[in-house]
Length: 218
Image 1 (spheres, rainbow, N blue to C red):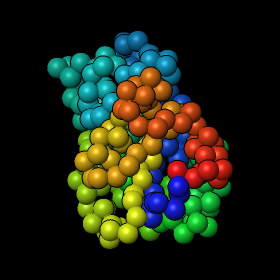
Image 2: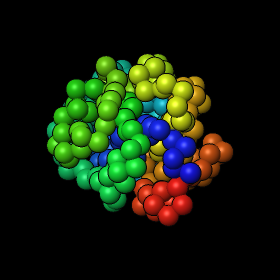
Image 3: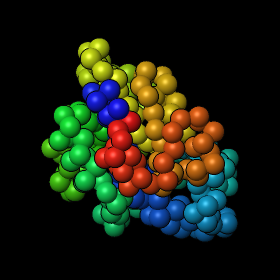
């Protein structure tokens, strides 16, 4: 039941923020500039992974001709310029409110740079739902494991379990490393097929996850 959980740790990009279309558009613009083939959204979801460098290599970037840092900076510049084009996934505010009303604590653990994470969460007026908001200190989206371990020290006191909700295999890996349960939403940056291989519950959308919470708990 939902009452078994005292805290939900949310991923941000792809899980609460619907930014997949923007991410694909930006990477395709860079690929075309370098005379490489653009990606469909399906192709993107099949090759996206952490660390981000590995995903770039799968997309076709040749880091013997230019650096990973160069591509990463160009991508992040465009993302920051256009990020407010993105919307939240359907049902975000309602789901966060449901958890708050049930006295379930909530935090965000993201591979997005911390300062800009704070800014975009404030843009959507979601700050009051979260006790902790944690992002990386660089733009290269490496791993959330160490940040997750530090977050768990702040929220874990032995009273109830913690659930991590994300949209990638890396979120499942983080959950295992930091000692939380995990569910994945197949409406973000990786395909449902890839997520099912993680052997944790997978929902097609945040609305489906929220409906499960509302009707029967977890």
